[in-house]
Amino acid sequence: MSDSSLKPRREFKNIGIGQIARYRLPLAGKVSILHRISGVLLFLALPLVILPLFERTLISEIGFDSFKEIVTNPVVKLILLALIWGYLHHFCAGIRFLFLDMHVGLDKDSSRKSAAAVLVVSILLTLVFGLKLFGVF
Amino acid sequence: MSAPQNVGYKRKVVGAHYGTKDFLIQRITACVMAVYTVVLAIGILIMPAFTYQNWVALFSFDVFSFPLGKLLAFLAFISLLYHAWIGIRDLWMDYVKPPGVRLLLHVLTVLWLLACAAYTVQILWRI
Image (cartoon, rainbow over all chains, first blue to last red):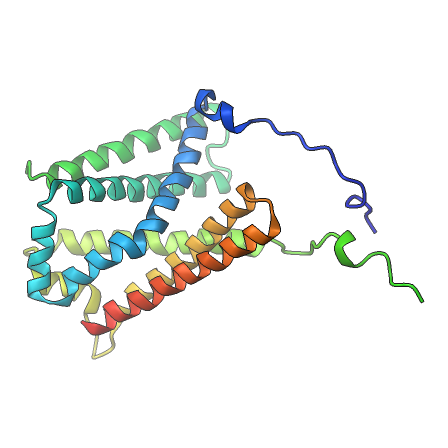
């Protein structure tokens, strides 16, 4: 039987709250923390924004048209754009993590490249959706 | 007779598979959602026109009067629910140390997600 829990172990904290703003994360670290942040964003927005809007589009033809009406509001557009980015980043970073779990692209160089690709691809896709949302095409 | 010393608050609660199952489920549900996302995206791209009827059909089409569209959407949502539970629970486990606060946050997370599930069922089965 292990007695490791009997004596309190020393705690080593490698980062303090005050340091977070000044802490320079590598690209893979940025992808990782943004994966968490986008996940929380989607979790909170699900019953507050996503499901109510989804319901409106499905409930009736009138609801569908009123959704189009609501989305003309620039504030709603920005909220939707943030959620679109959140979904796309979570999606792309998640696929990268699945490959890392299968030990594909684990070395420092390719992991850095795939992290950069996740950041760039999710921003570019968000731009495409954003241009569509703001009626450029 | 004295109580055994290796139980109670002094004993570490660990066991086989602790975490492995959740690790796997989080990844499997991610794959389910990713596949459903691609299916929806293809459905939207091959739509003749973005109308109410075509949009509703994405989530409520039947195959031989079997409600396949609704069930696929519901299964994707159940995956989302379980995936979000594991993800948010991991956040509380990483950042919140006092057991009472952590338990409260776990309970609130479960309630939040169950409310979302009820909401989704209502949305899907009303169309």
